[in-house]
Length: 504
Image 1: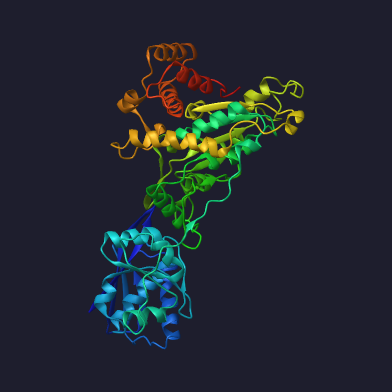
Image 2 (image 1 turned 180 degrees about the vertical axis):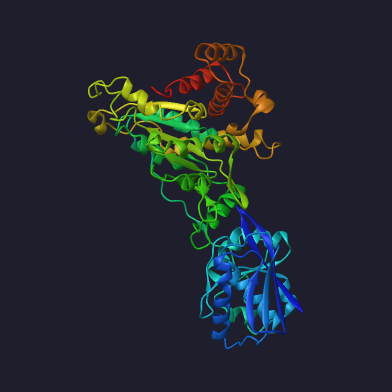
């Protein structure tokens, strides 16, 4: 007789149900795993055998065959250990078969029978809930998986506890969700002296999730401004928190099963590889753009990133998702992030400083910022120059609004967008609007339309640039509490569009 239990195979943030079949039949003693397993899955038979021996459970001297169905789906990871052991325990009548068949299990086994935490418990719990089954996982993964309230989650520390639970000798209480991670204390915008225009651009970017580029001399405060962006962003909604946590679960970044309402802030170094940024590598793992989903991706020293890496950002910026293509699979990850790029005006950094600029003006700046292609620059909504701050200004009292004050304005603007797009699933902020919907919500008044047309003709705005100006103008109007986009909103949006050009 064939016994069955279930586990999952990961395809991006999705977890596909895999049926684990176990057959114990007459023949030469053998233990084989079939169904397109990778090396880690194939080695499960040795870990399972040792773990059962540690429990004083002897395997029968027969042929044991484990099949992972569907057989044409690649199986990767050590989390197949527990479901294989569970199916085998049912096959030799140690645990009830009907209980095992109602379970989705994942977990790695140590040689002494302990259950080792694995990644992906949260998407696995969602798959189990969708299939109408309970989830069995290592105890350390239980608080994470328990956030999916539709599925019963059993967290066990050892294989012995699993056996005791299924035989009703010592039932395990369902796991409880982990604590909501408290937000880290954010830095305040008032710490930044001057730079009022850059602060305003930061506020607009946060309100509508518009991509921002800051260009300025070394030490002018670009990184300081970017580091204070999380302090003015609204917390993640429950839906956004679940989306983001699923990606972080696959990357092993959830701390003790806690779900965070703080938006991610990722700042990879400019030497990061393409696979690290967009995803890929062994197992086609999510990259930085996906780890920044619903949050901020800060790329400092923007022109120093390899050209091939920068060009791969073009499609994810437009579509909000990235497809990692491999010979045997196409993995799709969401990546709706707010891009904040920072750059020096030239290689030496002082092109815009009259007192210190180099002799290679303007060639130095054209060569340096010219590394950013026109199509990529066209996708950046806000471009602002960050001038140097005089050292005499550093002792002046704090100026401008605090992060808390700015965050309140951003929250009100986000609330207005949430109400506006309530009937449009998949659209959350102005940056997502396009087509007729964008025309309906962001059409300026007659004066604003006339200004936008003249700017488009004078500066040769592309169709993409034209629509991005409309989105920014709509966000500025939301910050002002205006229902209609007017000429001042368009003028301000245009001013950020024309501040910095590629190759200047």
